[in-house]
Image (cartoon, rainbow, N blue to C red; front, top):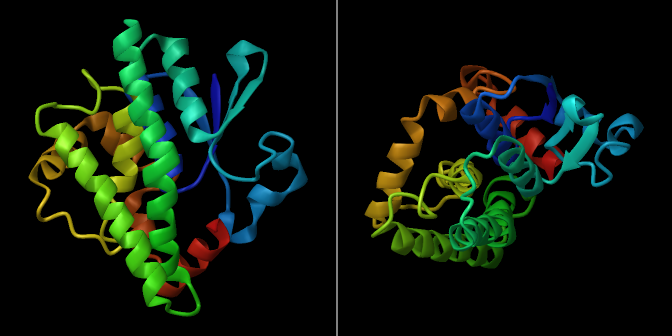
Length: 223
């Protein structure tokens, strides 16, 4: 049994989507980021970086994995799914996973910070990170022009990237001029496993009912 420690953030959704898509049995521990539960000693013993998500694989002697990309790789290797066996195709999927981990996530994360959470509005920072996020979206759009998914087939790269791109409005980035990215978003959104994964750890309707002030405070805690 997999034990998932998570919260309602793009990085958290990556792993819950993967677990739903693979059908692995798992339990969920919802960390209260607004209460800094992720900084408590018991959790730091699992994840020294004090972030979510983290998994504990109780079927593998309690083996612990932190960092969302590493978790996706671990689960793909554990199940033999969503990571091609062919060396070239496998590398292709990992390259796009690294693109998300090293580029899109950090840049869009900063767009979220300066557009939504920063106590002082800094136009240069907002424009800088929104522009870079859009540039990375354009890279994805170009890739998807002739490909249904980011790699040769549906893979962990798609599961890693989708939760970020779906929140483009929260970053203040418009994708109206990126039709292939929009098509991919619709395709991913239509998957039942993706839909179920987005309801972990709490139903999206619960999140939607939070006040703007509550969401802003949560954002500051995540940062």
